[in-house]
Length: 377
Image 1 (cartoon, helix red, strand yellow):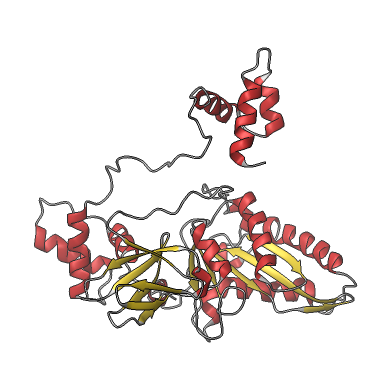
Image 2: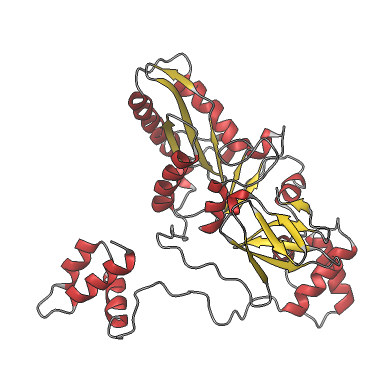
């Protein structure tokens, strides 16, 4: 039964005379608030029971476009200047009577417009201990190699919240295939919600040895609203917290221990994960336990995906089965994982160049000769 069908059925049952609404809510596992919302919407004969866009009609605190253009102009004039320097330049140029956004706001504007890459952001930290300010800003995911069991190889899959070090996924897998990872991700997302971004290495199932940055798995992640970044090749420290987690897992659980079955491995992982999250003090977070610093994300897993929508000014093309898209006389290779998906092309400041977006993510920059000049890491 689809979500829309389930909602329609609930409303039809709820409006019957003598129905106990709260008991019906328990059976359908929804809150009374949600129930009365759908009952109210169900009064309309044209109601389709689909999710409506929650985007506000007005964002009064959003930086206006003119100020954003000034910020980008200063950054383009001085490509290596950070947000604090850009803010100081704008204060001098505009004078004391003009409000200039905070440096943190300017930094987000620069990132959103592709002026600061995630790799550059991390590199600017000088490799002192770095963590995101809040839970669910970044999750790190990876396989911890493999261990031998009586049933063959087991590949522990791990995912860690960057801020709290909370272990969100610790699963004993029999393979490293995308469908296996996706199933465990869906389970975690349903429980903890979506992170803003995920970082991973460059191997399967989230990367290719041939240098392509996207796979069917990462395209799916972008589609549900998760940003993607990859570790720099030969620099595992960019996924360092998960790498350190693997060392701890090996030292405290997996070393010199034999498991007869995959189920035995999972049982051991479950017990150790409970201790790691709720009992084991962590030096990297001031000797607190990860659970003390972690909260679930406010972004729920989208069981029903809304349609992909772009601005009316965007040039939208559907990627063909061979991974290519036609723009004018040029035929660009976008990537086979995007086959069948619409992408948006937006002109850059350089004549003949286009930034390519899939949903919220800028995935490439194309030049006038039909070549991909840049790919997002």
